[in-house]
Length: 139
Image (cartoon, rainbow, N blue to C red; front, top):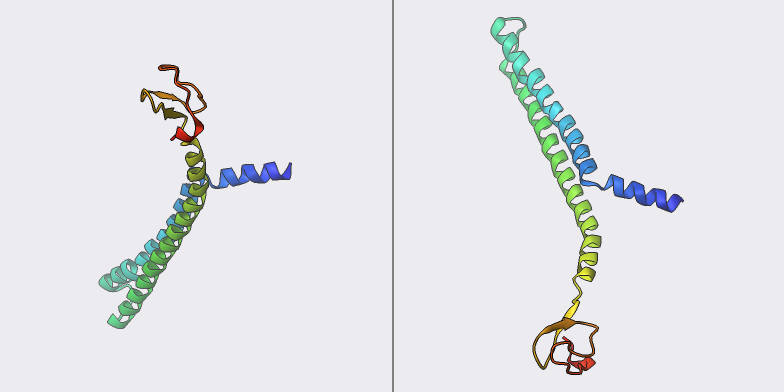
């Protein structure tokens, strides 16, 4: 019962929709930090500088720029880590799919060496020319 539950949970957690949603939420949260940093460190100080609401020096604005650049770098690092994580998960999940696809791709027919028609792989006699097919001639 627990095995079945874990198997169902694994299938649910590794569905494309769930992974896409998780990536979207994480990227959205990281992008929120960029927008907040842009507003707090560039737009608000510039507006206050222009309207004389507060006295900022060019040094203060340079400090704000470094805060914004830090937020952008953090976003890029987060996106890179998520990309590598999802790529690894996709590779792991596709391994099982490739094995089953290879098993399904096993040949189901063979050619008759005498009349060159396609026959079932289990056939021991060709239905067209009635020749006896030896096991060693199967492709």
